[in-house]
Length: 251
Length: 251
Image 1 (tube, rainbow over the protein chains, first blue to last red):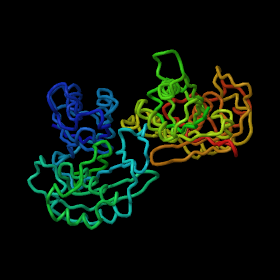
Image 2: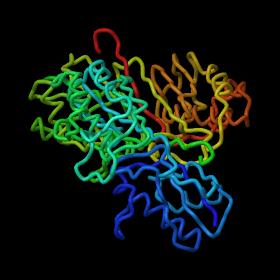
Image 3: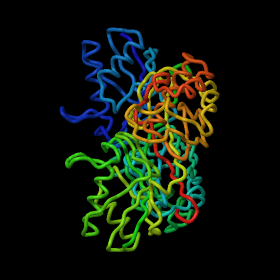
């Protein structure tokens, strides 16, 4: 038995999310499992670091699978890229120790969110790549509010009602809000995320950026541990899973 | 009669180029003329600064049209954006003097070309936004070669065989080659361009970047005025019409 680690890039608009569903529904896991089953000659389970929602993109998703038919990593890379739609690309394949688990060994995940703010016309070229917010947003207010989230907290206020995680405590170690050209780029890194957590944080930041709430509201919302106090869930197509890091000796 | 200037962004992959063709073929000019005819209640001709080929994108194309039914520019902007596919966005509408001509008054045009070089896997997210060149390219060699093109020259060596321009002399005032992240960005500005000129220049630069030709070949190719001496025509989907400038008093 050999275990392989995959690094993946995909256009979330082409998939109904990461997780395999019934036949006929195109998901990232489903497409990968089908291709690898054909390559390996046995059924294959692919486990991902983050189960991205429908529409969410990835530039650095990590996954792993096991096979009884070991092959050179470059053979797997080429074969999977030939057998899957062009909306998905395997960037790298490495053979790993069987202690490596794409989801449970991950110690850090980083997401990126793109907002096109303050431009009345919708984006034609990046129409499923950024969230279009026609009114301007005040980046300084957003940055001030965002800093309240850094550290170890109960993030229940930013958690989807249907989120199934047992423990709502996470450690946010990176939280950046930057104006880049006509866009606002938000980067969030943590040991893990609750469902819709990044999209709910960005939604709350957008209300603060429109000056409807004060930046100090962020801390109150966080402490309330109440989803109804936070802002709306922003669209999935502005969100990118960029990076997953692993501990020493299992990465 | 009133004349309006339009600034346009579009995803070239959704159109068979700028120029109107027979019914049923989707072109940028055709889509705009149909929407404006409905808005104005009479047939409309839209003239563009650059007649981009099928697949070529624009972030700053400029066009104009005349109507006997003047309206507020913002009304035209909103109406056209509602009536056209999301692959096309009108960024700005201004009423202009009738001496303004999007094509003939333009004094400068700038194109941008994106190459994803040195990465074996194809791009999933930017699959119709960059040219994928799996082998690495030497940016320094390309930059050295590119500088030979600056100035006023006969560009016949970089001109499509079917190009109909009477005069092959153009003045290149900007020619930049830059490594940005994992990409190579090429920016070319001139008073005007011959057909396929930017794509043939980039194709020639790519041969030099692969070290198959020396950088000094660029000047010899230019002087030959012979299309067969230059490199291949690279794909349209890496190319963006970014900017068009107009002279004093007509812009």
